[in-house]
Image (cartoon, one colour):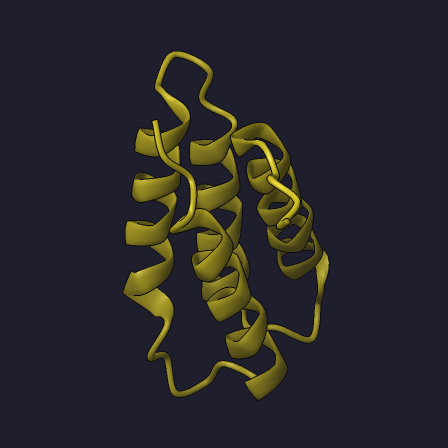
Length: 89
């Protein structure tokens, strides 16, 4: 039987990773800024978890193909998107 993780826990996991990206000075500034924007979107309490996750995915998608992105950061962003895609209302 699979362990079911709550929407809040998934958002918390994604938030931790986004915070790590936004705090990493080796990552280009525009990518850190976008990670911070996605993090703020996830923390917006007046929206449902599904809407917050979808909005954050949309923000992350904008930079996912940035040629200046370090490969490890791209993998982290894919991991965040994969987690957020499972958040349903």
